[in-house]
Length: 120
Image: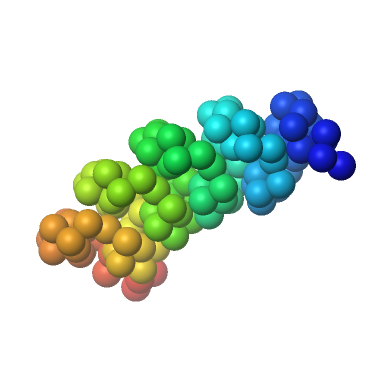
């Protein structure tokens, strides 16, 4: 029901069980940091359902890429230039390197981390 998707407590409980519930949350709740943080703790890839502002929230993005490196593709462009964010993502899955800013794709530490994660 539509009214449920706008209820803070209902949505918070839902995203704690399954992060993908964020997809069905009312727009104002996709801008709520607490709800989005709980969702990305479950599944980082749901970052794409968050508001533009929250996709630029560094702490939230770090949480998301630790769970699912492909969340890097959903982040604000500025965070794709952030070495720590990119390093965290490629340590989770080296394939996330493709979403990094060009200068970081050539960074020796990031390349090493990406290769290492792909080997393990």
